[in-house]
Length: 374
Image (cartoon, rainbow, N blue to C red; front, side):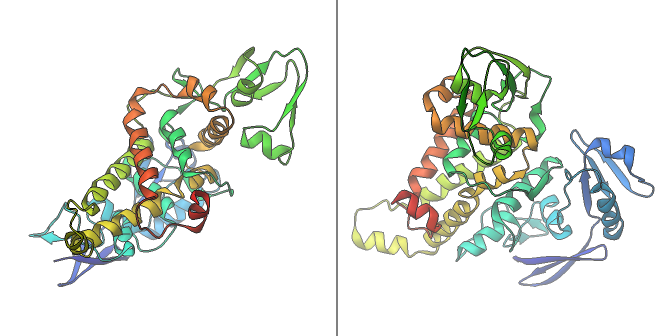
């Protein structure tokens, strides 16, 4: 039996399979920040306290009312479609095989990238990187603002900054030691005034992209200060707390490893033209190519999505964009400061493999990627 789709209606999830329809009772969840409890009426709602969130479970109509109240004072909440929540909670997906009532953990054979995306994301529509991040945050029970707030394009190479700085919404801090992020604010000590285009998105937006003038005593983002001088005082530090890969970097690493796994499948292990032709047209190779395409569809626009939303928190988003700008302008300076996170070295190796492999695989890559690599 194979899952074809799922839909939610009035407390019941209908699981459509190739053998019929299964029905399961299900109560959906809304994830809100812990402080939201002081502003909400939660009578009759099941409240589960998680490390980073309150998990509220109630009928859908009740959660919609709570969502309206929450949105009045914060956008950092997570409310996934109930059918996707059900699939995530039960570790099944669209395309999953079900044997004796238990979902299979093996990847199903698929015939197209659309089928592969549906399996990986548990959804057949929506912005691929956003759906991916929503799923990751939901499983970790972390509320965040996943809506697109801006339009910032970053090269996929910028994902290295996510690993170098270990950026994730649950570990951005202003008062604990860790990795001092490029979005920290410092007071400059410079002999002469200087102007430059800011690396920081907040500073750059204020002046419409025009150069920012700095003089002694000026407050600047750390990323700008590093380009100007080594003489400054930190006045508002922002850290990412040290951890062995936080939630989002860890999820990206898992996807990169999956890409390597499928790329090994599509690689012919024979020099015979006939063997290569037979292998390339086999169901196994076609399925692997489909997964590779689906993973590329998620990862290629992921850096731009993270830079254009508050998923990483506003401070983390600033740090991400500023860190990439610093890396782009002064890669040696950046590497001297942030390229020493040994925990992330395996992740960076997988990222390099992914970016290099794209140039030799026959995938339907976005036009902007093809132009960039031409």
